Image (cartoon, rainbow, N blue to C red):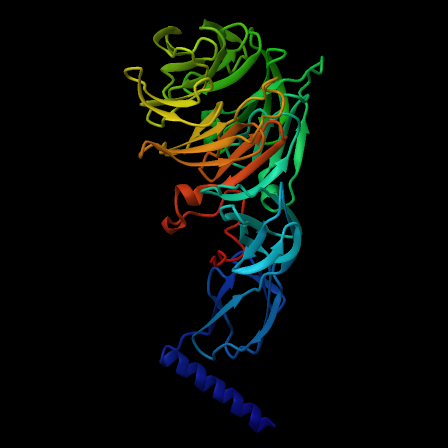
Length: 522
């Protein structure tokens, strides 16, 4: 026995000496794990895979456990090399979860990875992570949809007859008469002003993506409990020097207009804590625009033919601008030097100097009802929707002249630009009901997609009844629209359309980098 012990001690000493003499590398373990956020246990102790793990000489068999939400856990036993690095790659297998897929109207066949899952409504199981499905129906264009599976989910979709150039995420119920939709700056929430409710809805984007939509109703403290919530606006206040030094984030405010009382209600984001109520001094206050350099908000007053200029810090009205009848759309230049105003009954497009608050240019459109205006990122071009003539105008700001006219479907309402200013999206409400626009339209409305570099409408697709609100998210990842008389919201993934994945587009904000690779599509 003694001889054996001596032998092993001598052998160990010789090996150690040889390792030192020949500079043999100490044993180590290099781990590659998918998904990257998986929890790793080595012999029961949690470790990370960021750096190689140094191992003792003559390591025995190792017990490795890898766990991650949405994946099947894996345990394995591994014996590393005696000297030098050992490389080990572990990929967890995604769990599958039950999901239901249903359509707003009709029935379509659902394909996933070239596999026919059946006709809607259907229940099936899909692996965790990003999954793309294809809707197929005779007489309809095929339509791609993106489902983010993290657990059991219910996905409600619309098969658009013409198809869309985007990838549909879903359709979600909301309160009565959703007038507008506005993404939060971090793209975590979608705020929905409701014309026929005593407040506004907030849709959680991550929950909606995962087939678990959650909508919260927020009711401002209006003592008369009136309805009439029309437009919403996020304001990012600059951080103070002290806050910048302490690396505190800037304050984000949320304003919503109530036309029936002529008031703005202010909340703090992201917790939606009520702050104050601000009277506009006008009648039927609707649209709002914010100027960061001027620290003011402009509010169009539909019935008093004025635009109120409100100081953000104090909440007081600095001045009221007289306009032509029924002002609606507003847009500040990025440097705050001018304000653009559209008038609905007046059919005019007006530019105000923000130093004097005097009008400096005016463009008259005979027989027009101008609704919405947006400015290009370089402030050279303004785009204006005309509900009376079913047009969108491209206007050169410097000369205040019409550069191009785009013809779209009936009653173009809200318009919005892609972040790079190359694409314009238009919600067209469709023809009015002959008795009242508050009654259901004879047919569905349409969304127009305009390629501004090519100078033409390149896509149009039908939606629900009277699509009114529309918004492109700050990063250009999402497009949302509201169907005014269906009381629904439609959500699309548009980043692949604006920036194809071949250019390296990342995962959407609010989500992980994707628990599973992109599905292989037919």
